[in-house]
Length: 457
Image (tube, rainbow, N blue to C red; front, side, top):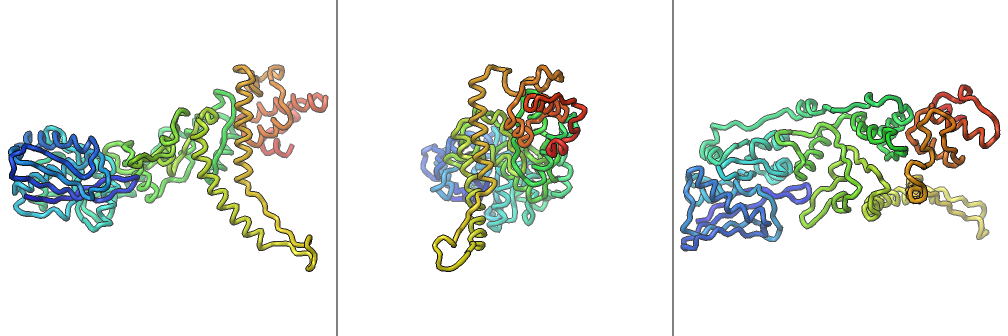
């Protein structure tokens, strides 16, 4: 006998429906076969499904051969979310559902040996895929219910065990779908455990963070250990605008597929902050694989990706990020060239030197090259200078005699790149610099007292 039901599989951050076909043969082979390019987790579902059926008091067709096909068969299936659909298909072959078809249901869930239904990855993406295919009912584990109920236009039912799923199919009128207010859930989840007010001082660094967050810019923080770079970076999400419902759903999809979403949490209401270790691979940072998985860049979507100890990252890891950025630079450069071409200066006709086309390089490309040069220079200095002997290493000391002198170009870069010093510390360095350049004693009381006055000075 043949019985069909629907489930869903994840590919990337999207999901597609999978038709689970179960056939119970008449031959006495005692086999349980799963076909349709299953991975090891899907193959092991045979033992879970068999034990769950027996422990819940259902009959398992042990003398016959059970064949399960996951269609489409040319796409690799992974995960344990097909367990519930397989078990219901076996029960359907035995007449448990009194001839009812399950074409209007999508089932997701991993079965434990006692028949309990455990949460799975990608429930939100599966609910969106079901709505796109016109399926109105989605049955998910109880801990995935709020996540899937965010999708409008479908009915989401939560089940805790296999017998409860059977009762839902036979008597759907005795169950109520899960309802939730997505916006109220988002407002409740938008709570941060840190705040920018925790940082004392560092007015210039805070100002730079505000500017970067307002314009959606990248920011490079340079400074000695203990200056507060990591502490400031962890508080960047708290000053970003609150997440919209669309951003929250998109972020929740990514985190659910990656398996980092907390069970029972309907939406990700706070902007993510991802800080990968500098030994991460390019695939771990960007994502990918035979079955695509989100990387750290995707997990930081709509939030902050913090690369601590940036020069320590492998070159190939930074190259895969630079390639995407430079692609955007080239697109903007092409637009700039088109704008310049419309302003070609023609001085006089008949002269071969009187037609000129000037193409200006974009600021982003210039900054990219400056960053590469700065990173290479910093690595050379790290190899050349002993630990604790870097430029500005003594700038944290209030005594002028312990301040390491700096060249004029280094000090100008310190002001523009934001080395995370307080204004008072910059005044100390500025006083020493003026005395060395002009041989004039300057009192720190006569120096500027704000970062804006420092730039004008």
